[in-house]
Length: 518
Picture 1 (cartoon, rainbow, N blue to C red):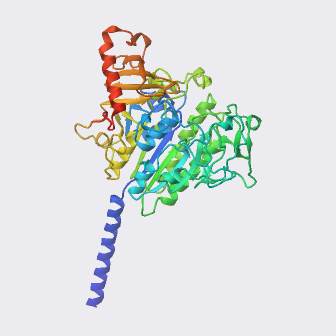
Picture 2 (picture 1 turned 90 degrees about the horizontal axis):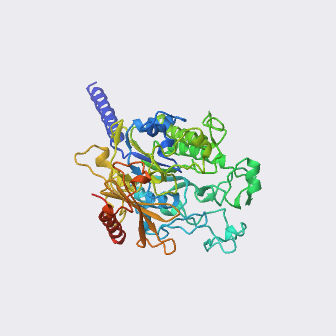
């Protein structure tokens, strides 16, 4: 009897200790991490940010807004460049655009991969921390496809596809892409929805959009039949290609990935690069049961609504799986919002993609590179916080290194700054002393030092970052909207300021170690 009683006591203690151990393991597990990168989303496209300056809200973004209230928003956040491909390089590596071998951009799906074999990437960083890693969406960093006649060799584009869409490239498989850069799983659009190849790839294999899909040339007539009014150029693609289906597919697969990995021993890292809201603006009829197409004043705003629903689908799945509180979510954009020449209907409806800021995507003004930046981690970061310290998209790398307790050193992500001290409200926490930001296709570069912003025109022929002439000087501390009347570039009283900023810019370009972080 005593023996049985003792067994019962031991069994009870064992169960209790096991429960404590399981609970402790769950509480101490490394967080899951999701980085969401929107495409061409301005601060004004997010209603939470729009309300900082105006109550004239044309479209609500409730899911992104809710994310903003769950952690910290940054109101002085910038993309590394005012264009997407260059920004994506910098975010992926933690290095400024000028450090890239293709500093002014990788524009085609057949472009040579821009990231070096030995270079640190977000995927490789998180693999080092023993994470399951996944990439979803627009890649735009160059993709290695095999030649049709010799699959052992890469097809190297010299833009001949502009003259002949039937170039000798095998688009059914990828030889160099996300999986070579640290991502275990990938669902990728090599150049987004706007450029060749018009196809999507799962783990580097062409994912047929239908059982009867074949490879064919997608041309203007094909797009006309779809009712899509924006088309780049003809080229190879899936015979069932439809850009309106890509967003729902990404979000569905993203939610499935979360569900599959939620209970696994290893945490997961998802880099989710949405196709929204880049052109072509081809909104789906619905997503997740919510009507999208035709539900707002413009196709562009339909796409903003779709993006918001994509975010909602990912967050809802995290909550459903019980892992939301211990998941870090970083939400931002690759550059500023679209201009009136691209989305006139949105502007005519009273919507301002750049809120109060001058300019838009591809321009060196604040509207070209000011972006929403939200960080949520419910179990670690206080809710409803706002920070006006200057940050930039490259900071994601060092922040994730800190979260995963890795020391990456200044020689790896040279221009990345750890945001965790700011997010945790540590006393004296700082960000960048000054920012270095690339402009757009017109080859500008920007240095912002404590609100003094110098815009430089890089020589378009040489493309040499050191071959640059100052063309604009603004004091954002009292001219945040960059009124041209406050452009001091030709005012002799500010020559010393121009010279000092130009000198700091050139010194930073020449330096092997970034000088802009505290």
